Length: 406
Image (tube, rainbow, N blue to C red; front, top):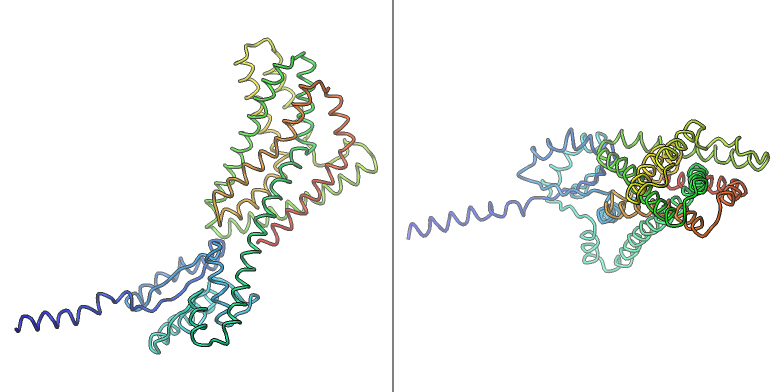
């Protein structure tokens, strides 16, 4: 009997310990990987807080750069009486208190807020939990909460709209970059070269296919290299802050220069006065590469194919000095998507490069059908003003996208 009572007492005292973790008060933390104060808070103080209150509280962390966590943050702040204009991270929700900013409130008021919440038995509510609680307490407030839910839906709709805008921006950026005078001039010379050296249709198809494929792969590799580097750097706030502002400044500069080129060309009709174009030295290097690898058209088909691939890669690397004016801000827009969906960002990168080679493929197709390089030269000269205006509008659009999503 004594043994039974002892076992019963042991179960009675140990049972609360078994469920101790479930009884811990929850604290909601809202941070972002691109927020310098958030990273500083995590690096300097979060571990201390967890250590000091490890047996009493449980920290639930949310990354507001993710759509689902952003909606929870939005709903929670509304529930605690904060308007959209007052929402900021890092934020810590403790019972009935919301502490915003580090070290401002979280460090100075955090421990006392946690002790108060523990002492008074407060419960932390966040996201949809807060809405459910309020609906149960006050039926009249249900309409109000549904309006808050509508705001969440509006937030989701706004994010969805940004994705659609971004996708179309990527398509337009790729196409405009493909008819960029930098890229177009190289294409025209390439077609002219094939014509001068008497390449027949089969050879043009072979060389053109290899060249287009090499350009596509080269630009993908350039984009992936830059994208992956920046993606890995995304946790370093000051690096990303510097990159974003550098991209915005470059976008603004290229917008002004494109507008200048458009105005100057419309007045003078002289392409030599255009500022944003491949320098003479770069053009000469590209011409030398094309001549060196493709002047012997009597090579076997495999060797001719390989030569065209090498030319495509080398020309792309040199040409990227000019076309990178569009590629860099486009990658900055794509990088924003990577915070929410990495694979969608990859699709955007592929889409941009597919659009970039569309003008190239069209010109090669037309050359196979018998159009001469003179026709393409006339087209470039006739529509240079239009392409400059298109670049001008593109840089303005990318600038707006980058600024509104800082």
